[in-house]
Image (tube, rainbow, N blue to C red; front, side):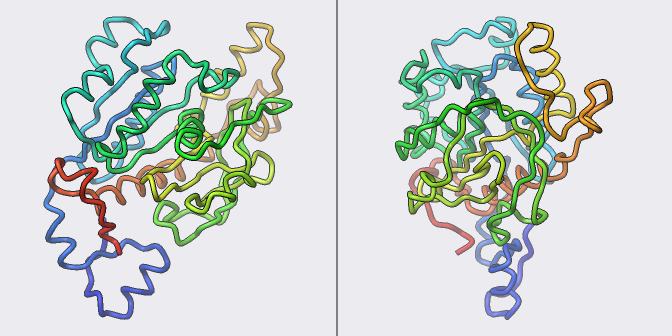
Length: 314
């Protein structure tokens, strides 16, 4: 939770520059308690695994969260039962028709990296989702392919195929220690990576509105802030369970698909040994920080989302 101190206290500006949560009395007075309404647009085939991973992270803060599961309207998942989808998911078209608004929206990745964006069957609807976020969502978090798709939609940046799959746990540097999204982060951290494509640092740096927050010398940009669109994009997988990379590796081995042992994941790179989770704490920090920023800046009246854009930390 933020610390409430007078704005003229010298510590206020010092802490603000360091990225510590500080809130003026008038800001605190505006933040009456209500649940934060967070949507999860789940594009992954294994819906239950993915929704559990994200629910675990966004449910670990002192804030009350109301999670809404969303799906593309015309896309029928093949790996999740129709009963589960019917019981727990709402199509985007239905949500858009009601005019509902959300404090936050997570757009997951999807295993369709080999396709051009406009070759994806639901690309037109997904672009409509991205545009809708600008008037109906206070803050959006695009994950892996979802983040790449948002960068392409809003900024025209293309994804690039890699010569080999980036697969394993890679060290990332903290490029913006004072960012409120990296509050509590180490100078570097380990993050799981599993993708065939990349977004290039030079192309992101060429857009003034974009800021790279986490970067790896081995696998490139990881976390990008897009302040103009009130969005974060992460291309790697802090939400992964301890055994998610193992599941992917075992699946490929069983299918006879050529795949390297995930780097820096198993002790001694030995797949017969149990993998170690070295990213869990930073996963909770990142999503907790994102929710904290939403809490401090979202309007109390949901109807004001998309209209009232004042940064309450300013």
